[in-house]
Image (cartoon, rainbow, N blue to C red):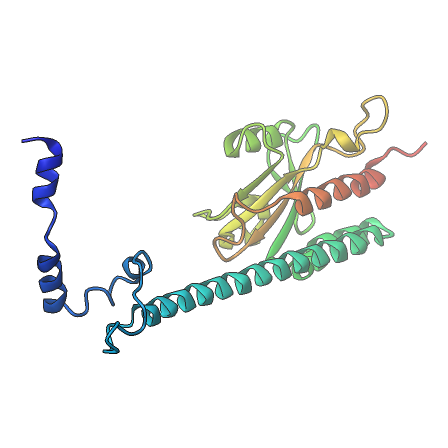
Length: 248
């Protein structure tokens, strides 16, 4: 017996298919994809007798496809609006930081104003400081750490990365200080970006990182774009450098 013969033996006869469909009238209705793959007959037979209207079933299937596409369109519009909202929030945060006239203003904007502007629950600034042997909490939201801490954090989280987005962090994140125990999702951004260095390789600000956290998991995730966060981190490094620059 050849393979073709064996296959022919397994293929049901038209009468068997008809008998099966008559015994299972819901078979095609439960499988709309199969209906769309079939060649529909005309709406009426040659003798004028009504027959099964496959065209209507296929039209219903096409309508379902249109509805699914419409829902996808709505989702895309919502995503676009969300992206625009994030961009507007980022611009507002940048303007608020640029307007800081004193170190006290800088601290207030960063720690108190940025969370509601950016729609997050906590913002923290981690700075490396020479001579610091252990983690020290400074003013609210400011953490002083020994040299090399930032490299160690990023080596643990994501070697070589400048921004790390963590969707779910169990046990919190001590970088945020007191609110750290409630942090469930966060973004960590390096501040010592070579793009902000002055000619000659001078760093305008100490090595450090910006930490943005949320109490709800999945607020940040690796699939998110990071360009807006990187923009804020670079701006923060420049503004911070103004307060850290030695006086002539």
